[in-house]
Length: 396
Image (cartoon, rainbow, N blue to C red; front, side, top):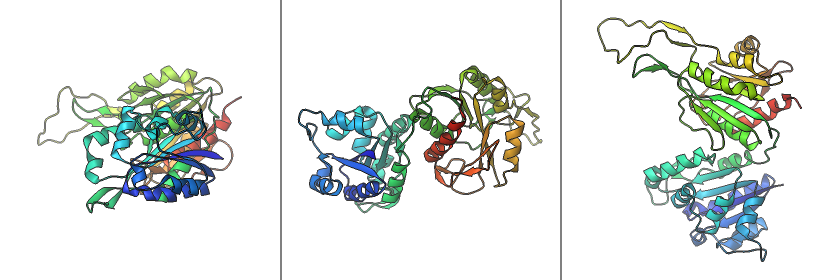
């Protein structure tokens, strides 16, 4: 049974944490609750102790077991730390490493998966400091369940309402029970788009956000791998703990990834690499005229095929095929032509999955056996689903 620490902070939405605790318990978790002193203005220690059958912490020196430092024990025993609702105050403290109450002290001592669900006034959420704190937490691998838009407690309308209990619980349960099946393995991930210069200020690129690559890097780290990410410009940074090499063009991506590929046990070619580049990029800026402008494009190197050629014996190579169709014929052809062990296809014509979204749906095709479908999942859940399957193909 997984052990979840649920942190509850001083938002009026704190009462909904009781339903969240119950939902996590229905999911098979032991739930222990830590309230901030401000949260205790809205909900009580007795409520959560009665609901969960576990002690509830509030003050920094609470010790359910005499002589045991609860903030260390709870941090080390937890499989997941959830903070819901998370106020602007706790977000900014987590980002800065402040530990001035029991919850923030547990968070600072904790090293596993963490999920936070913010809830606050829309202006507080939009504040530059809060947004910077959220960016820093995402960069460290923290999962964020975005608040909903609607009328908040003060009567204003905007983004700031706590997400639904079912949404938070689903995201939390997806982070629990990770195996360490990649312990001791070296994983190389290419991620994001590439940019091919047209002139000094313009480039050819695509809509890849890098979210899937970042999710795979995070999942691989949680499964025990040593992770290197070679990434083009993305909206989401790779997680803290991964070795990151930043590139711009397809040729730069190939050069950087080629340095890492011979030592990798698993290569995940997630990047949306531009198939063509401008033959002769212009120096300076191309100026508008009344004449047509013709650009001559030449093929870029096939990054994933080249990495497969230099990979060590026994390495597993996984490609991705983002196609505007659910026809798997193109993905199967890529699997064979590029010498892949697996290819993960996704239909980017469907709204809500694929490019720039927080969810995805993959079809994993291998050299043997029927395709497997993930169903629609968060990208971190998709990453876990995929890695659990391809890890079985690793030798030894």
